[in-house]
Amino acid sequence: MKGISSTTTAVAQRNQEESGEQKLEEERSSMMTGFVMFIVGLVMIMGTHSRVTIPRDSIKELIQKALVESMAQKQRDLIQGDKELMEQDPEVMPGFFQGDMAGMFDGEDDLGRVGINFKQFPNRKWPNNTVHYLISDLYVPEEYQIIKTAIDMLGFFTCITFKEWDGDKPDYLIIWPVQKPNGCWSYVGRLGGPQIVSLQKPDKKSPQCFAGLGRPLHEIMHALGVYHEQSRPDRDKFISVTKTNVLTGFINNFDKLASTNVSLPFHYDYNSIMHYGTNFFSKNRKNPTLVPKEKGAKIGQRITLSQLDCLKLNSMYGCLDDEAFDKRKYYTICDFLGLESTHASVHKTASEEFYCDIRLNQDYSNRRR
Image (tube, rainbow, N blue to C red; front, side):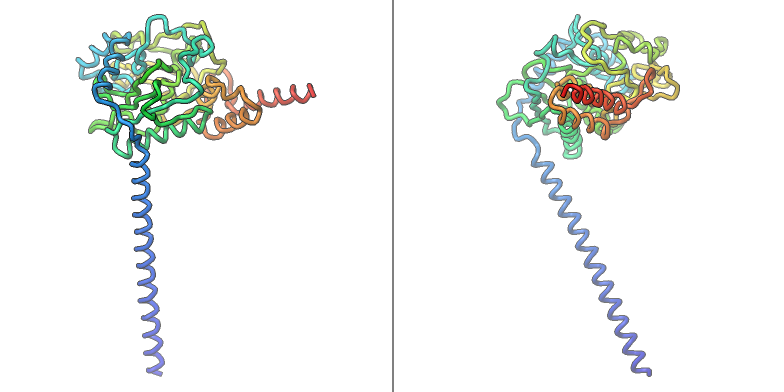
């Protein structure tokens, strides 16, 4: 009996050892697979960097162009000379028109309500719904991937095509970590020729323009022709500006756009990625400069496009003017992937409003058959 017991114990011990070795081997294999996948991912990220480069002197010229053309030179002087202002939101720090909108000229505040009216200003739209871009090689892989994901997301949400610049096309975006003026900023719409979208790299104080996809999406939306939500001419119905809390000399950043050339019939959207936050341009960043009139409404999210952000962009670029299938496709994408849009006067989701519109169009088409 002793012999049998001893043999049984030895077998059990051997099985346990083999099981342990097998488990260890599986863990090693899993770790190796993870490591290989990490390397493959890193290679893919590095490999997707555009091979085309642009001389640094050309970047300096484009930055100077933005500074000269901007209406907000006085604001930039204030920001660069005041430590308190340097601690503002990275979309406020650049000191351009409304903080982050470069190259705005006198008289251009009537281009549209929430986006440039391309019927009135067709040259500001990207031709053939195609945007070429160059991402700076100064960004580390993680930063590059955030930018690339934001671009890919906009391409998926809309019928706009984004292509890496081939070194030949005359009009393209240069996404660059401009140091002065730093922060997150962009031109609004296509200007013609190369134009900068500036996304400041993280520093010891904050992630700056790289807390997530929100700020890259926001600035590229500007480059596509979309304005800030709170500058709409109808905004006073939905939000209050607390002027006493606004930094001295910066109240004009809360001006409303002209009501002429209204481009898009969409409701005011508290949840828009293009909306100022509650303390933008605040004297101490504690007292709000903007207060929603809808109880409980929050503003200034920088996570992703809202449903209405998505629909606005699709409407501006004619993505909803095509066949019924394409129209339904983009409505569906906006509905399921965009953040739920919220506004004060109408308590419907974007999907309820726009699917209602689709059903009405379908009923009308059926009656005509």
